Length: 437
Image (tube, rainbow, N blue to C red; front, top):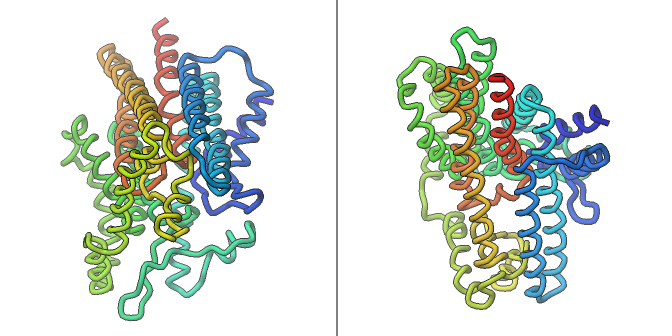
């Protein structure tokens, strides 16, 4: 049973960013949904009663959020509200249930298994990004790669994002196996910001140093190709966080190798079609377009909703119904995690989620203090714990910044990221204790 559970767990981690791989059965059922449910089933069948303290706190938050969402049920007004509420609640239960199970499973399997899990998650994002590059190359050659890969598997239409055209030449933004190039851009910042400090602290002759440098350079290239302003915003915020403890690396050759390689590749591409890239760049830095106005406009709904439903909001996952009723548009969600949070769960739900984030940051602070204590004791484990803790902190803050205009904090990958971040401190604390004893 352990072997089966482990395989399902790794499969979920690897595929957690593959949004396009889904089927329209009783709503939208993704590959990650199926894998997570299978993992949780196997985990519960072979589980022991004792769980770490982190899991106990997570169960407490799950109970709190569930109670608040159930209270919000009484604010539903239409059959469409009920349908969206039910779908959203079921999906969230799977996500948070996976978080609880994943933290417990990682803690029980120990440090070496944890590194394998982290590697599988990172490789999954890299594989997704690599598909995006192939997708872009195929589109430039006049072929829809999704039609030969994703569509036969799911039975649905799928293609690369077409941003516009420059002198008759289409501008493509790779969305890879995610549903949107902005989703891809925001997802990529997690491995980028976590791998960067680990790479900087690796020993000069470590066998993984070159691999991590190549991975960082590759992900930077894909990040820029997505043309995602939200992704760049999150990456910038996370980089500023890392610049504090790693400022002495800013001029080092170690950092310049992946950055220089990535920008050299991009410079060659830009030089070959300068006017094309100039037009695209100017279109992405302007802030007065319809897309930008729509992203900011959703914030205007907050006062009206809080006036009518201040405590518990409109009901979980029902913003799209409200938006459609007000504007007549049915294809536009809140496009901001914080708008969705406030509008759908009200002031009480928002305060509860704020408590959850404060607790997560407290756990990450504990991990950073653990790294500092290991460094003071001259334990070589500090060279792994400190950069990992700082990387997770930067990635969380970067993702939060990006979600001012998107909702990736509702997606599977974010719960996988939280599981890795929250399991870190108890795993490495116990490993350090065993080493001392």
